[in-house]
Picture 1 (cartoon, one colour):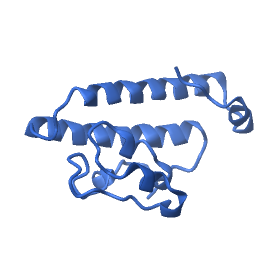
Picture 2 (spheres, rainbow, N blue to C red; picture 1 turned 180 degrees about the vertical axis):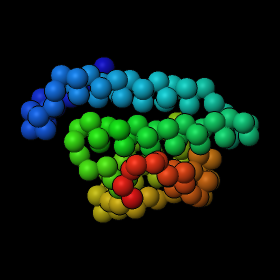
Picture 3 (cartoon, helix red, strand yellow; picture 1 turned 30 degrees about the vertical axis):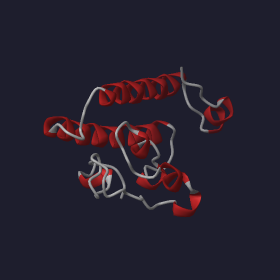
Picture 4 (cartoon, helix red, strand yellow; picture 1 turned 180 degrees about the horizontal axis):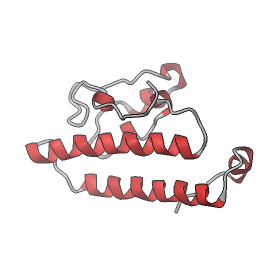
Length: 127
């Protein structure tokens, strides 16, 4: 279940349809995480390729989330990318505001492979 801030909804002047879309995007993210849990990207090359595609799809979901919330579409504020299953990038460092705007990638992360998840840019998203 997703809990959304009523205060933020009011502040952003979101419509009922917007709130529904945000809830749908959260469900899509949860479903994507469940699919990723079933993969074994550490040892199976096909699963590694699928996991990387899912990671890029996750970036698209975050851009869409920002759009619906009426926020600037900016990858620097994305936080789901390092929380995905099988990601070995440092969670605490990437959540630390000190590193805001920079992604700290683990060299042994099979998802990000030393490259940010935006290796395949999303069309229409601001850089």
